[in-house]
Image 1 (cartoon, rainbow, N blue to C red):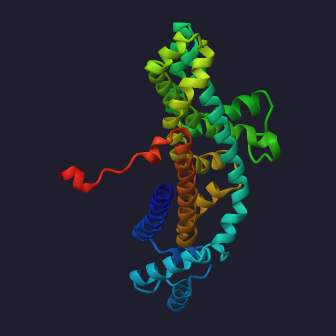
Image 2 (tube, rainbow, N blue to C red):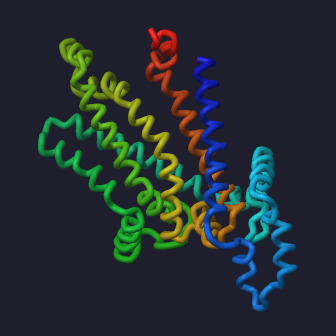
Length: 319
């Protein structure tokens, strides 16, 4: 178990380093100058000496490898520098926007798991063939719908037509419902697809036949026998979909005019604010690897063979 945890933790740290390096390279390949973009709104254009002073202040006048080393060392200490656009600490800006995004993403994830899981269980458990086909056709339809289009339709129906929820900028529970449903819909559909396929395969396994022979009912077979074995692929998908939750929050927070990490990302990219965008990318990678690490820790609980199976040695493979 210790070796399993160390291997997973090492992979998570490698993903974080790769995300930091990739964001650094990509952001410096984008055409344009962040310092010139920052001062472009001034009435009087800055002098060459003023631009040089600003570049020295933000450290963008040094060789690329030096900038990479300094930013990596600072990031290891939790310091991503100051935003070129606002002058505020990047870490403080992210922490201020985090509660709203965390509430939105957490609520959407719960809705996706409950809704997608329930749909898969009901679709594979019903005895009606046409009902099963109709229910199993819903997830592909939900996945194919663009997130921003779903948000606009929900605003049109539930805000403008029915007046049940605020359209934009709402606070509290009423302002959370429509954004959370918009974000949960495609993720819940993916969970439903994967879980339904796993449940269908699990119901054909010999242990299910044995359970039926012992007189276990249809509901008992579904919930006590097949669901536990079929949950591993869906659990893997949930870990991977955390990244999609963060990416989807960019669109949802823009459509519903919510303040959060998503809108902060749009502002940073628009202004070519390299420290801010890099801090958000590393933060997103940290959330992603943490979620997947937690999923890896749950695997042995569902299937102890994952940690008890010895790795195949190279010597054995050669023979």
